[in-house]
Image 1: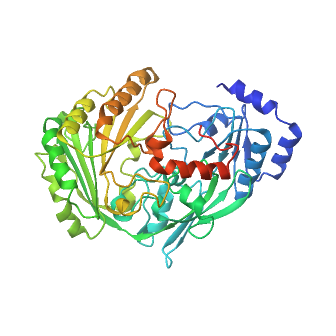
Image 2: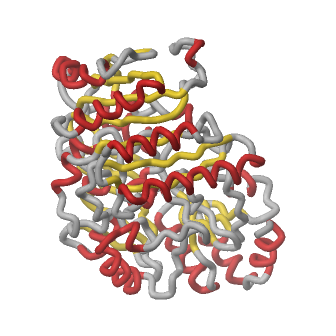
Image 3: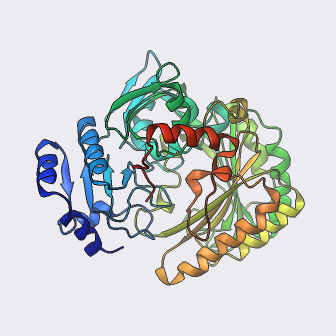
Length: 467
């Protein structure tokens, strides 16, 4: 779609209705042709180039309700922008109305109750800093600029996942605007079916204007392992990792990442650009216990570099920030929940990583289990509770001319690794397209039937659509 198509949509709207919306809207309505329209429609993934008919930058819940009612009256599909960080670019829809929450970022901590409430436009860095003033945290993502809304609604994997579960597992309540424009609260005791659905159901049921989470004692410093191993030791390192990950306590949260050595001054120049395996881990507990628990990650082979040591939790939450700059790179991601890391799976991953056309691309193995697995699969919309690993397939590159090659590589990885999975995918690492349809079964497992029923009840006309 083009900007002209978006202009046509807005020009065809009833002028009186649009003026009435403007009169009662405390935020800002941004239209095609406005000076900040291009900035307002841009999202984190530089591959996304969509042209909404109207961007409603809300300042309060009343604005969200007004914009929702306007969209329903005029048959405009609604997308919702929180952090704008979803790889699929679902925050913006061509010729639709964007309910933009980026100005709604208030965060309040109740240290006595160990809860935190944040508006839907807040990002994880803001929550982390607010909670860490009291030595507390709730499971968030691994990039501080990620919006809390999209990550939580899709499940929410982060550094604390095995210790305290997913982001959605730590929800206490949400405030939502429904497709009818009503403001409701959802919790275990109030609208419990809606609360079940927002915990991993990936949105589409309404607009969450605030999230309330449980907090846990974390930090302020954690022991962190950061060890680069050479690519020619990949088989030995990953076999070690498989054995290590199978026996760790819940306080240990690890990754194994296949890629190339980045050009950082802390890493040997002669290793830059060479294949590597990066073992990462954090221990949620005392530093001395963490040193002992993570030490094996530092002894899997002769390392290229070992950057391990104590790190403030808020710094750990920014560890990958520079690797994922907003708007500068193109991103195409896929994922699979893996049944295990047998030798055939490891051999395939090592070979596929070396075929990546971009040095920025990685294959990320997330250790799961722990607190994630102790929630019943039908207790929340997020059902993928028993898989021991999540494979993140990250195609990341800079030039639009390289789109086809990088997308093809990511698809090839997903297809090759499918025999090592039950086909389950993580909704936050998905880019649904006509070539890669994201089936409800793949995303939500057996819970997709109940999720569809709740969606039909709360949004029968399909007002809330992905971008």
